Each structure stands twice: as structure tokens, then as C-alpha cells.
Image 1 (tube, rainbow, N blue to C red):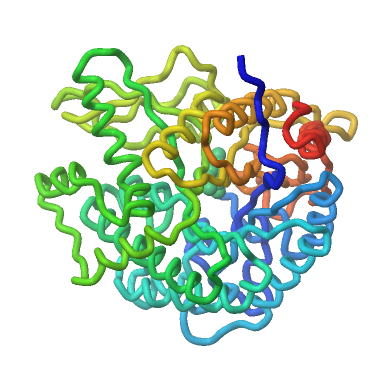
Image 2: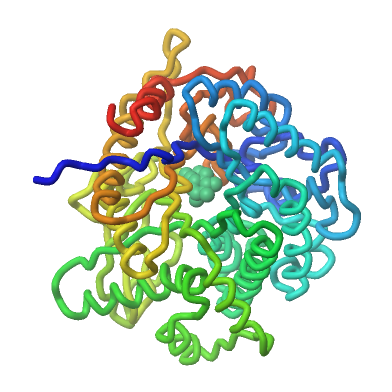
Length: 480
Ligand code: BG6
């Protein structure tokens, strides 16, 4: 047995957050409203009506948070910029105070030698753009996004070298236009779902080109929510269903980022449904050019999926979320005639029925490496759980188990030739879970707050996993 080479010396051990989930201060210092600020106010949309109005108040407490990061020796902090803090209306007038906030946050990170890794879009579209022209539904969103991206690049690019343009395009578009659970809350609008995706792809592509023109030493990519699939059996129809699933649920996005083209099988499928994506004549060229310039595939990994053949009269359900936190309540998803996703009986599940599968992370890295031959940033991985505070402490060995097993598999992926640049725990502090409120906790650092708006002291308490992660970082992944 060959000895493990371990993680590269310059490996970036990190932790992540997203603006809407941590910042709060939703209308302070000139910030405009975002799609999420508006969406959470619609009754019944979020768990117990929870909002990110205050979130965990990172906007005012970022110094304390960064200091906690510094103590464990974090090498990178992945956070997102809120577009409507920079451009309150999405376009038009720039908000200097918004720019200043991220300047301060970036400088604070650098003070402690923490490399800022910046996401430009973690789902909070300026509400004004939706009011002006329907947001991502209009091609105009591409220009406005690229204008926002350029401002961020030119303002922060001297200090930020890692850029993630889009976070989980597959998730925010499917939840927004198919499931109706994210803004704008549309259900089964298949045509618009694919059109919106095309606009987002173009926004990604033009931003990549713009960044490389300004800073050719910057590293850029987008982060994909990758749930690799396993065929249920060796029946040929299950194998073919797995291909359908992979094409429509994974490669549809990653192929565009990495190859600059849509998978042919997906385009044939869309043709059979009479869905035609409207494109400009130059779009294919732009996508191709940007694909040549991306430096990594960003991967948010939480679970794998199982795929079986689904007969034409079979399961017809796209929403497999269990938002209750009661194990065993997840519905089986499937598209009739294509595939369905039965539960994997070999794997344990979280309280929200997410399959716990550390080898799936290795599988994901190997799949990306062999298909795209790109370096990889694991931009999110973590466990959502009900944490309990006892004697002022949070003992979360279950989270340590989860992270340890995933990091072990990641190490194997490195030994197998995958070029992994970074691993970011989701999340650094507890954050607002979009649809599950504050009860579903991911953080290495506990934040005292709960569902009732403004309740809790917002005090930070490092968990057992926080101290464990410090040892992992110090030993570059050897002391697990
Ligand atoms: C990813 C998102 O989908 O998963 C994060 O990028 C999110 O923003 C995380 O919080 C966990 O999802 P959830 O629904 O458990 O909060």
C-alpha cells in the first residue's frame, strides 16, 4: 500500500458563509432590498416565517468573527457580496458604504493572513431588478450583473485572488422556477427555467472574461451543488436512467462552465419538449472562451443520489426536501419516463434526510477530474444538525465524525490525482438556513439565536468541532 502524500502544502483550509444568511443589517447604510428580503416576508415561505433581517449580525460583528477564524488558523474565508449593498437598485447608483463594508471585511481577513474567497452571487438578486424587468428572466440581467462584477473586480481584485461567480446555479434556478420554494416562487415553469439558466450562464461567462482581462493572476470558477449519482442496480435501464439524471441534473451545468457547451442529450430532450433556449448568435463563442479561462470547478458537496428507471406512469415529483427535521419524511423524486431517486439503504441520513456519504465526495472529485481535468475547490461541505447547548458548551462529536470522514476521503482523492485547492466547511458560524430557519445548524461556532426575530443574544460560542478543526488545520489534515 502506497503511503498517502496528504494535502498539498499550500492547501487552503477554510470555512464559508453567504451574505443573506449571516449579515443582517438588511436595510442599513444604503443597502437596497434583495429578492430574499422580499420573499421571506410572504407568509408561509420560510420555516416559522424566519428572516435574515438580523441573521447572525455578521455585518456588525465581522471583526469578532474574523478573530475567531484567525485563532484556529483558517487559511481562507469564503463569503459572498450582497449585490444590493453595492448597487441598491441593482444598476445605476453605487453605494459607497456598501463597498466600504467589504473593503473592511477583506482587510480584516488579510490582517490575519486569511485569504478572502469571494462569491459574487449567493442568491440575493436586487429586488429592484425584479421590479424593473423580472430579474434573471430578462437578458438585461446579464449586463447589470457583469457591471456589478466589474465593480467588485476593480475594487477588490488587488486583494482578492479567488472568485466564485455563481453559487449553486442549479439550486437557485430549480427552486425558483420549478419548485417555487425560492424567489420568484414559480412552479414548473420549465421554459423559463432553462431561459433563466442561459442568462445566468452568460453572466458567469462574461464575468470570467472581464476578470481575466483585469487580473490574469486571479483564480475563477463557479460553485456547483454536486450530488453524484449511483445506479440502483446493474439493470441496463437503471444505468441509462443514471445517464439521464447525470445529463439533466449535473453535467448540464458543469459542462457549460468547463466545456462552454450544453450536453447534446439535454438539448435533444429539450427539443422533444418543445423548449427552445433563446440565444444571441455570439453566445456559444462567449461560453467557449470563458470555459477555456476558468481555473477550478467549485463543488458544494452534501450527499449522493440513487437513480433508478422510472416508468412513464411512475413517480412525478421534483421536490425531495424534508424541511421538518423529522427523519424519514423525505419524498421520493422522479421524472416519469426518465428516472427516480429512491433512498440509499446503505447510507445513514441526517435529520433532514440528507444521505451521509463521505466516499461520495471522493467520487465527485474523481468524476470532475476525469471529465474536466480541472482543479477543484470544495466550497461547501458540512452537517446540518440540531445542536444543544449544555453548561454553556456545544458538544458536537457527530459533526466532527462527519467532517473527519469527508476529509479522509478528500485526502484519498488527492492521492488519486485530483488537484484539490481548498476545503471550506459549511459554515463558519451558525447561519440562517434558507428554508429551515435557525434550528438547522451547520457552524463551527454556535450563535445564540432562534426563530423568533431578534431573539437571542447573538453571542458566539465555539463548538467542540471548532477546536477539532484547529488541529486539522495545524497538521495540514494529518491529525483527524
Ligand atoms: C447550499 C447553500 O445549498 O447548502 C447554502 O449554498 C445552504 O447557502 C447549504 O445553507 C445548506 O442548505 P440548508 O437548506 O440545509 O440550509
